[in-house]
Length: 208
Image 1: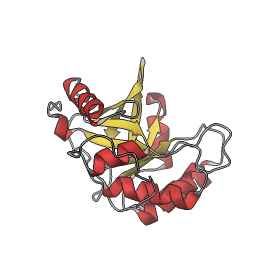
Image 2 (image 1 turned 90 degrees about the horizontal axis):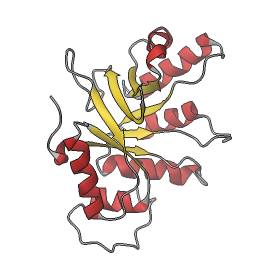
Image 3 (image 1 turned 30 degrees about the vertical axis):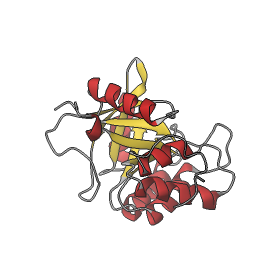
Image 4 (image 1 turned 180 degrees about the vertical axis):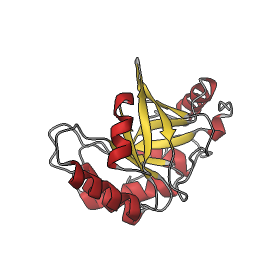
């Protein structure tokens, strides 16, 4: 059933793609989960030396409920080694590992990581995804067997609480179950204190 209530729209947080200090990055992730984020997305910037799967493993040990999402890497590496890595992270996260893949690679994902959740990109709409293969009995916020896929949309970081409420309303009106937003101190403040007045500029992001 499509989402129509903005309060029901889940929030995914795209974590900092160029972290300066990994301890603070991990603290930020925990803070966002504590503030209600349903998914934490890891996508290191192009040219980064950081391994997204190592980051996911660290997040799996430090978080408890949010989906942990990254993109399925390009083919070419040893499939056995990748499969073991994914199985390890899936175990550490208690079924929360979810990979983003092009539609034609979902079959490959089945072979690499049976039981892993999957988002697919929607053709022609690069800023939208569908959660098409929920897995894991303990994974939070995933549809059950036979339910329609969840559609997620992307949005920019909110400039104000009014802008955030408008973004949630637009997502709900478009039938999106989730909204993916870049991490930032303003977003964390809004998630923690949605009913507070504007102007809380003194918040430091890493308070988790």
